[in-house]
Length: 310
Ligand code: NCD
Image (cartoon, rainbow, N blue to C red; front, top):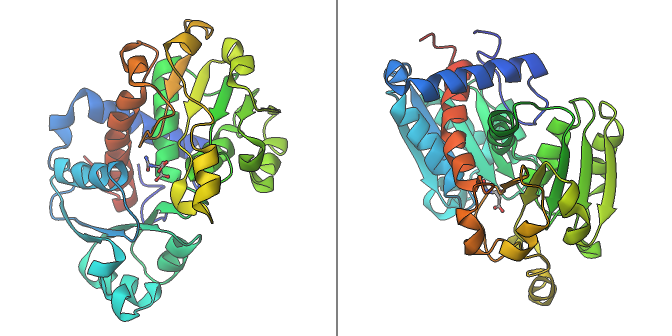
């Protein structure tokens, strides 16, 4: 350990493939014997600066720090911080850095966590910035794929739903394109196709290929992984478009019949209507396991950025 000490995490490729591997190995060790890590962050303080709603990301970070024996301070919602008085992100973070050892920030504006990272000398983690990136969800996703499929290369991955505004999709594409022989099936309505930068990430990847389609059924029989996403209501400019597009894809038991018996279904959650609850009992549905993996990978991340040895 040590190479990640003191660093920030803004984008999925901030860590090399080897550094990511070390994180996943540590996550697995923590998962196998959590008690051994119960005091790893003794005396450390995490600040959670959440300017946008969150359940999994905030709670899993807080649970991660508490399970490592550290403590947590923070706010949830702009109204409960001095941002409501007009304070800049730079000033808020400079102040937080006087009190805490590490911070995670979620913000509706793209690039806000980067401003925070540049304004302070404690490690800052991007907990999701607007429709841009969500690197700790990606660590969660990669750990889940590694556990469930045993590899991070030569996979056929279907990404379905709101590929335009879904930051988890943008980050996952970026991270997976680094591995060999990936095939992406990008399934979305025409209005919600991936942004150009995600297409470039695939083109610049390690021999990655991609296919864009509007019908989920065409992709289903070919996939190793189906990554479902919700339509990102809060990023739409008008309600009518959202209402028209929100139920574009609904994965149900019937559609699962045409998928491979080995395909796994992932979802960053929260789910709205895009996966019928009847799919939850299908052994291929791993989205709640994925949420749990998120806590362990965040434990490994906090330990590594803080440079604490077990
Ligand atoms: C995602 C997010 O915030 O981008 N949620 C999460 O962190 N698991 C996905 C979403 O909100 O749709």
